[in-house]
Image 1 (tube, one colour):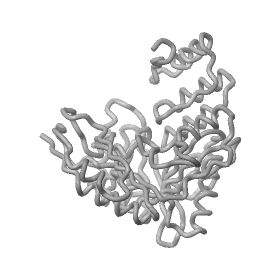
Image 2: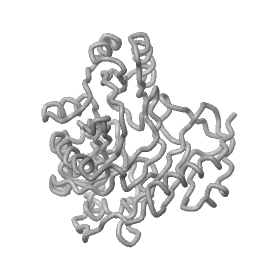
Image 3: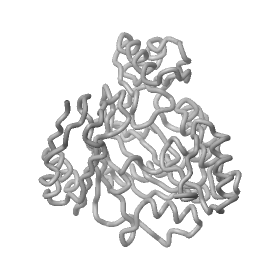
Amino acid sequence: MGDRALVVPLAVGDAAVDAIVALHDRTPLDAILAVDDQGVVVAAAAAERLGLRHNPPDAVAATRDKAAMRERLAAASLPQPAYRIVAHGADVASAATEVGYPCVVKPVSRSASQGVIRVDDAIQAAAAGIRVRAIVGDCPDPLLVQRFVPGAEVAVEGLLLGGRLEVLAVFDKPDPLDGPFFEETIYVTPSRQPALVLADLEATVARAATALGLREGPVHAELRIDAAGALMVLELAARSIGGLCARALRFGAGVSLEEVIIRHALGLGLDGLTRETQASGVMMLPIRSAGVLERVSGQERALAIEGVVGVEISIASGRPVVPLPEGDRYLGFVFARGPTAQDVEDALRRAEACLEVRLR
């Protein structure tokens, strides 16, 4: 593919940026975008070097470090769970006791809920600390211990334009995420939260992006809404929604989320693009147990469910599958559209019930 493809060493930031700059010298680039967490810092640094539209690299780096993110949000008085940062080798149980139970132990630099464990007492906290350390291996990063926030969880998909947040979609997560592990399943939009809560969500995510120093491009935020309707910021990433979930979103006459992001990066404008009026959603198929995937059957039956528009198994037969908290991916995705969010949720649940997963 020649210069249509370039391998960059993401673990060595300067070398990656140098490689991108060298490519630009041969074939000038108009924009640089990262499609996942691992690439966001390199993309921001390379875009800054080349004078292209970008976020400040230090702001993007803060989104990749949950400890740094918590500190910046705290400095801006954003609502977030009580937390402690636990240095490498320090006592996790003591920090958890200070925060109060139940709480959540997590690594500072992983995503997709990898290594995230709820604990309800000091014995569980000590065991979780050992387990999370084993997941991150030799990495000397600290761990984050934060108070568990009960309530509904939502995701906000947005685009920053010169520091101004344009909310593209708000997803409900109708399945309870109470632990001990936090595998996400269903995302459905539009959200069924009240209008006042939605307005508060938009304002809070905008404040969080400002607190982190982000100004341009996609953001994906996760928040909890407690029983009193109060918001807590859980995460904010300088990227779009992960995996294949973006297929659940369409704008205007079938424009994809990726195209919206690319148009913004190129300075082409959004021409008033808004999300389609039809409800839509995605189910991330969780991995229930470890093994080697033999096959997934029932896809034809799932596709026959009214409203289901796609089933994608993203792990090939013969490959190992690992559940959370050690795992870092989903088995696949089911997509649905319908008149209402409830219709979409029902279709996704019926489709999952059609699928049979065989492991060895």
